[in-house]
Length: 105
Image (cartoon, rainbow, N blue to C red; front, side, top):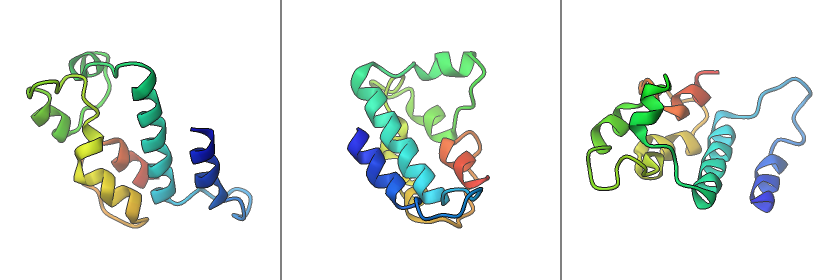
């Protein structure tokens, strides 16, 4: 995990102080953190996240009723993740999507 994060951060080491990392880099870091968290423990069920007040994206709402859908990492199979990790300037209309938040800053 450390090696992966070091590689990702290496891309922005030359950035001037006070600048924000590109949205695609922030998205790739988020994906790496979630993958590592998933290895060490099961993700919180979608319904529990929603009950706790966390935003749920439309993809999670649609797929959580499938077998294993409550604890699956929905972002792994979502097209929004691929778009977010590839492009820096993209309009992402998916409310509740963590990648939407990373591209809205």
